[in-house]
Length: 550
Image (cartoon, rainbow, N blue to C red; front, side, top):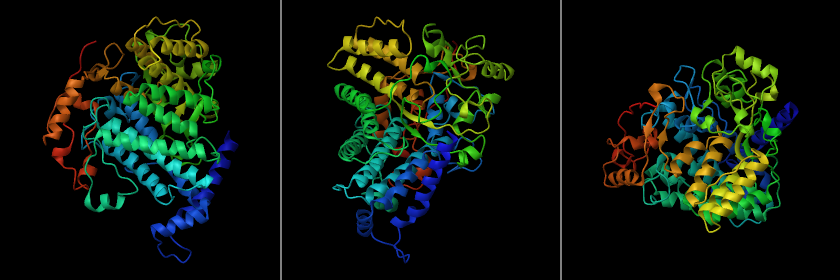
């Protein structure tokens, strides 16, 4: 694995040095026009390769926005933030936990540093994607250019999908709600000089689907093969579209795309035997579809502790293993059958897991890891207490596609019996041979799928978005959270609409109800620079949250 990392790093570095400036200047250094850029790219498609590779490196940027802020390490920071806001990842309210503001749900306000970091992380990636999209003709029939254009479109769609779920309530019933501003390759210059208003949820999702549809078509037409799983392939683009369709409740389309992703991907779910040990650390694992490549020489790794494994990993050096442990919701753990191999992804009430070898178990005992601590994610290279936190970060696994398919079938025209069969076959084959759910209605099957998503995708940055699209709100009772963060925030369509209507009436920015904690306000870093978004355009603020008893 180490050799793989160094070889890829050299290749990427070479592309970056050779190509980054070539899209902006001619050999004599004169700035060239957009039309000239298109001609340069048409004559030599490899000129854009460095810019495309550059987008993937932004996913793991190091302290891009705030010096000495140890939760500023790119998109994985967003993943940990969103999981920390929810109900299934139990964090501790301690100094070593750099995601404590998400845990306390105090990160939502327009003045919160974490909020600004989330916003800037996503728009920085969008800016890079726009730069690629702007120089490649949409009508190109060159294989490489089709592939590169698809990368820009798919990643831009991915970024806007994340933003849409952070800064407004879910799509269903709220398509007219103010969402985020759509800055595209076609309006970026105007937006920079004149400002840009918030687009509606419907407009943002329409752009997301347009970008994904175009990316899917380009990747289907192109015979160019991605170098590795940092890049979006046809099946990844279709899988992203299935995610979006699930939120949009376009059930039949989601089921079809999930199956298309399964059929065309070479990825396979890991077996029960393979799931009996810590893993999920290398994009070459057979179940990964798309991931963030991390090299041993990257700044996030050289930092030692400013990286995803540091804040998540129980078996490596970092913040988690010295006190900021990541644990599963105790009530959720209790509901996992003993026959399910995933029960070993966390320590039990006595601090044990059958998935650990003697060295791993001994280390956790000596470190005083608490009950329900995660042992799903392995340390880099399998080395216990390694300080080389160079794990790749997963963005999509094939298992998710099976779960999307099951839910979408149950809720769509195929019906609950078909969806339940898909779910049962998947869980029995890959996780729990004794699994035998009895759900019969669409809603009951959807609930059964959600339970499986909570287990299967734990710690992968998706759980909070499930809470939002299913309108579950936040209910941390009986989960093992500390008393001061044991919150209950209920979500209803009526409360969402009341909030949205106040903003549309020009009452934005003022205090609403506690449901406002579920979405973020547009940060000050944006409103101060954007003339077309002011306080009255912003989401409502929230009163203080009061902890509840179990």
